[in-house]
Length: 201
Image 1 (cartoon, rainbow, N blue to C red):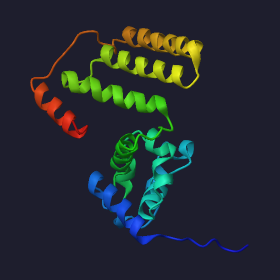
Image 2 (image 1 turned 90 degrees about the vertical axis):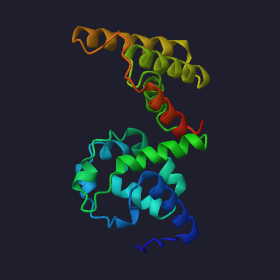
Image 3 (image 1 turned 60 degrees about the vertical axis):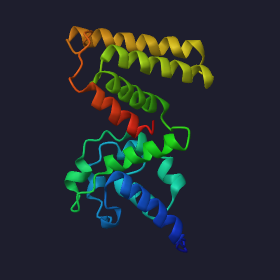
Image 4 (image 1 turned 90 degrees about the horizontal axis):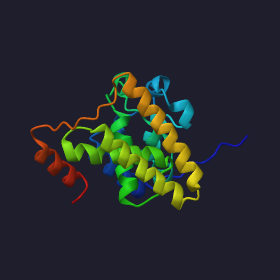
């Protein structure tokens, strides 16, 4: 069976790798594909992409593949990859950077609910300096409902999702894991400033 020839456009590859490296603070060129990160990644099997493969996509300049894969959205930021990596490369910081790039380019997220969760978490944190669970879930449910309506999921899908969220909320309240009170940190203004800076406002 003939081997496949790999073509790399040096300028394109260098541009993408440099952008991701600078924004994530990770030295992508230090990855020599030992795959220790892949062996410990808890979501690699589910996403079909392991941290080493994602880094290789970026280094080779494959922008489409780097921005359109489930690892970017399903990475749980457990930092197992960085702990195992001999060069301390933390893929979670890379996936976070790629999320930001996807949002900036107005691309459709491969996992809309994860994107909504991420957005709602940041929005709530910017208001109080910490997550307010009531507001956080309200923002998430609203975004998810809008997605269902615009993507053809319909009213049934929205009702089913709200029922699931209510059941989850009740179970969390029984375990005293759902807090209704509003708590603010002292430096809320500083958190808002950092949030607005990150969002380019």
